[in-house]
Amino acid sequence: MNLLDLDASQLERYCVEQGEKPFRARQLLRWIHQRGEADFAAMTDIARPFRERLAAEHTVAAPEVVSDNIASDGTRKWLLRVDAGNAIETVFIPEGVDASAEDDDDEGAASGEDPAVTGRYRGTLCVSSQAGCALECSFCSTGYQGFNRNLSTAEIIGQLWHANAALGPRPGGGRAVTNVVMMGMGEPLANFDAVVSAMSLMLDDNAYGLSRRRVTLSTSGLVPQMDRLAQTLPVALAVSLHAPNDALRDELVPINRKYPLAELMAACQRYIEFAPRDFVTFEYIMLDGVNDSLDHARQLLVLTREVPCKFNLIPFNPFPQSHYRRSPAERVRAFARVLADAGRIATTRKTRGDDIDAACGQLAGRVTDRSQRSRRRIAIGVAS
Image (cartoon, rainbow, N blue to C red; front, side, top):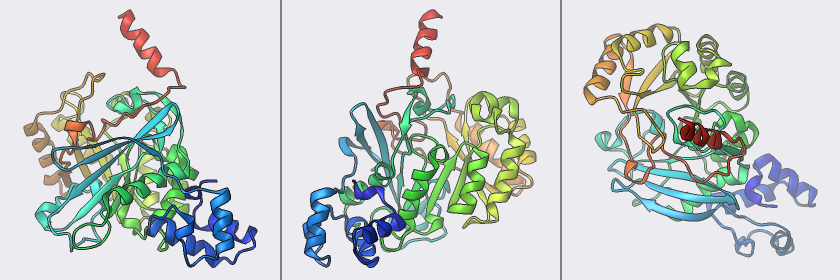
């Protein structure tokens, strides 16, 4: 058994089953997650017989590193092998100039705020939850890879465990990773149990000790799971909206056909009652001539009028199979002005890591596609 697979309650139950006191679980959490220790022999405040039993029967193992690339802007992307046929991508985005200061109101990459301007440090880790993705959003590289499987808790939290080990402490002290966004490969709410287990470790004071405001989950709009998350482990919420009406969103985000916008907006309102923030972040990718007109902006205002929210406008990041183009910068500014003139907060996300394909929408990894979607696309392309 890989002990990265166990959250606090599971680890405590395991220790009791082994005849150990419950506090052994807290000791293990601190060694494994706070100190990043994988060698049971080094866990010196744990009785030797238990350490020897752990070493004989269990392991602490993050996904194996296949490649490690650093972009010109400091963004770092790891390709991590999760099994013989699949590898996922994890991205670290360092921001800010003052490593000694932090802003607890900062929600990470979803906020669009610039720590370099505020003088605060933020290190955001973008974590994957699936090998591939089954939702087929038309502008996303991950969806074009098809889908293989959900990741385990160990494979999800292992990305944070690895990043802390690889990055080391930042200058001035403290961990390099201050924020986590569940925005990597896959739809997090489609892998609910493992994602919640991993996030509970992120929040646990004996593990990573992040606040719920510093962990953001991004969803395409799985309404029942949004309600379940609100009751189970409400963290900061970002919703991949990308369209202001059902007809267009059906095309861009096909899950909308199952959970249309009226249902999604109602779910957002319900979620806010339990969330650590009093707003939802709506992510909106800017596609040239598709969803970026001033009329689209006005429709967006009407759609979200009952939902306390902020808008994060995302310049489209191209990938080889895509047929979309990035909206011109002036059109993005005009779109944002319509929202701002109505009293809404609208930020434009700064593109990071695009020279190593680490920007939003570009993560692909290596996926052995069990859904056969990628094969069908190739066949259609040949036929046309």
